[in-house]
Image (cartoon, rainbow, N blue to C red; front, top):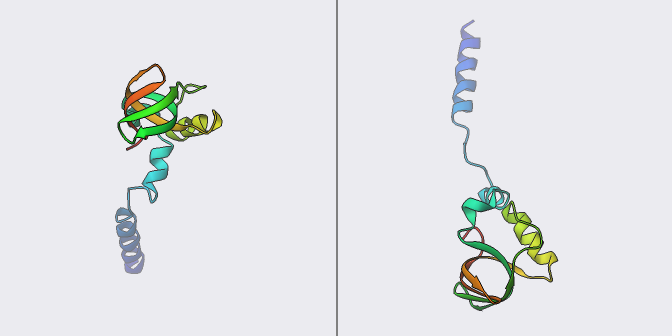
Length: 102
C-alpha cells in the first residue's frame, strides 16, 4: 500500500513538471492564424529594394491567406514571390515591409 502511494506521488510530480511550451515554437508560429502575426497588409513581392523598408512589384496573394505557412506558399506559387506584411502598398511598391512573424 505504501509503495503504491509513493509511486503515485512520483508519477504525479513528473506530470506536473512536464514542459508546457511546444518544442518547436517556430512551427507553431508558422501554422498559426495570420492576423496576429502579420501587422499590415499581406502582399507577395518579387524583391526587397531596401530590406524592411521598400519592396517592389507587390501584388495581393491569389488566395486570401489564413495561416503564415499558407501565405508563404501562396506567394511562392505566384511566381516565386516573397511574403511580406506591409504598412503601405500602392502602385506595385510596398513600404515598411516585414516578413510575417518578425
